[in-house]
Image (cartoon, rainbow, N blue to C red):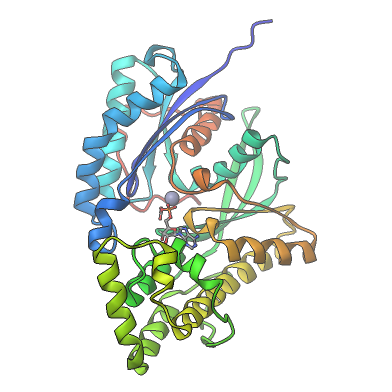
Length: 374
Ligand code: KG4
Ligand code: ZN
């Protein structure tokens, strides 16, 4: 019997990564190309939307070409094109959506619109396929935690026209900064480079996480909501109250200007006081994320917990989730680093379920900066 395989090209341009990937049947990754703009935005300490749009314009053609080449296929054999519609930076999204629409029109292929957050959920399932590991059981609770998002969803499966689809309910999320954004802002205050998360993750191991107690954020309403701007401000006040930290901050600024941004190089320029501050900040953020997510999982009797997005790479977050979830008898799933940060394989995988259900778009598709998932 000849079983038809469906090849979907995914395109992602919602923030500062231009990405394209080819995925077979929503499971098997044939290529996964990501052109990151970090080196450019680093000079500004954060993503500059206008520059991001221009870089996407520069990168999108070569990135798609490379994804097709690496998959060993030609554009003509694609079954559909899936593109991120939102949420994200509007100018950045516009580049991917316009390119996806044009390609679909020129090749006469179906066009699929994908919510970026749904892509992050699918990344966890892609990982299970890629590694031959256990597939997360639904219903699940998914924490998406990155530089742009910190949000918890309940993920269930439902059958639409005989095709299994995921359905999502928003359980909670940040009221202000995303967790990754808080890492990046604190790293900026302490002169630890951009993005801040990876370096602070490595430095935190050398500090005392109980050295400084940050007050629990007071949030009215959902117990599953987060607030990270308060802790960032608490770090700022702490630095202002401790002028003795200024010389080392100045020394690290110099080092960063010289291009010395590795965790090892920066650690040599950190006193115990700074390492303790980083470790305490991280402990507070991680405790917040884990406590709320696991409380949601218990409340909803979830069978598994999924954690996706750039901050999912954090070693303390992973260890704490694993330790605490075990106590509750829930399984936790993380994608690999390549699949947890922004990529287009997750967009192609999310697009596949739309493809199977026949949800296609026409040439009027436009990007939506704050596109809700549920
Ligand atoms: O998903 P991502 O690559 O891009 C978006 O924000 O969409 O996530 C990047 C964010 C940055 O804020 C970065 O500081 C954070 O993820 N990050 C980490 C770690 N690696 C990346 N935060 C904490 N620990 C890490 N190991
Ligand atoms: Zn993302």
